[in-house]
Length: 281
View 1 (cartoon, rainbow, N blue to C red):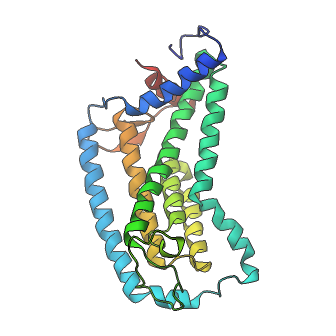
View 2 (view 1 turned 120 degrees about the vertical axis):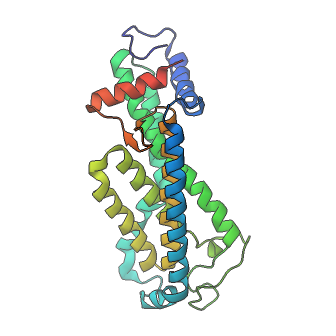
View 3 (view 1 turned 90 degrees about the horizontal axis):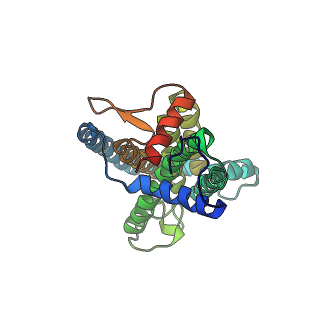
């Protein structure tokens, strides 16, 4: 089935829904084909290494010199006037972000199954971008959950004191799941993903991510080093997912020097090119 032939696809609606879903999954696991993917992989490794080294140094510095002082400055947990912050912080909760993106993907598949030709192509193209955003958050959140379990850092005042060195590795409970911040992971992964696709939204998206980060501090859910670590995990995770898509010619192009950029051209042209890639055998 070719999305751009203009010929109505065969089979009933259930068959078309299955075909759309299978094609959406198949494009993600097909062999990488971009000729410049090796250069992009080297650049990803180099940037990830530098970011991780700088981030780790900053996390340690905050843990030693700032975490305890910062949490003592915050209002007591449960302060009634903080209810707007408690609402705002949920916009960075990874479960909610993934639920919204997942629901959008399902809705898109349901609509695309009833279309054909260029209209289906446009939806498939946008669906590939939704897949990228969803996986950027999902992969980053999965890595964060593993780190939380391994590190087992206590949240502020767990144990009764503002102790930034309260660690119980492999505890697995919410009280000892402070590092990295899951909200910061989701917010920065989403901010990077959206900015990678639509660079003009970069300022808005990273402002959103920073606001989510600050809400976690005000609510005494995390130490400053936790949210910095979360921002690092979310950014590097989304960078890795972007490489995965670019290497398969999905939504991104790779320049000769290994730089990954969103597909050029008009929105319609970009989506059609993504759809052609998605529908390739």
